[in-house]
Image (cartoon, rainbow, N blue to C red; front, side, top):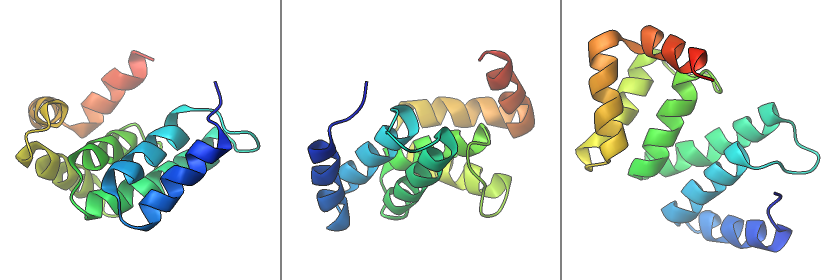
Length: 122
């Protein structure tokens, strides 16, 4: 399924004006849906750009999704595992339930082991 260009444009306009929900939706669109002419690597790079903007503006969903992409190594971290932990802690502080659970799992088994278990389950 491909997203319609006008919906993508509408999201980009909202994101430009700082709408964090639009930033999250754009990140999700680029991370999850095929877009003509873009490889998965290019889409991940664009998704990370939108997730980072939303995460810096305090959006718990952007923080969680960016952390998950970093765990799966679909993007490069800015400062290693500390960025992942910081993103999850900020998201969990806003009562994002998946972030709370993921942070608990990472605290128990560590980022490297969690990454291995995710890659084994693919």
